[in-house]
Image (tube, rainbow, N blue to C red):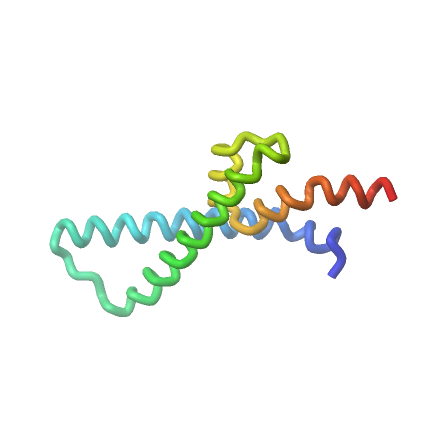
Amino acid sequence: MPLNQIKRIFPVIKVISTILITSAIFWELGNVYATFTHQTIPTSFNVIFWVGRFALTAHFIEGIIAAFYAPTKSKTPIQYGIYTFFVGTIGLLELFLENDESVIKKV
């Protein structure tokens, strides 16, 4: 798939990713609340919690990477790290492909 076709679906992926990461955060907060109030959660939700934790961890690592490399692309580290945390890999792709596209356009 050419890069232009892939970039067309970026906005859709960003919206879906933001919704899912926000949902994972609220699921985890609900789990913590249930633990503190001594409520039991059905064991069938364990899979959802583990998938959410994996996604949160992956997005957290991506956010750290983006915050680390943002100054090299003249971006604000904290702002771009938080943005990448919510949109995921798309944020990293936008960060790293920014200069590559200008090189491609010149050729």
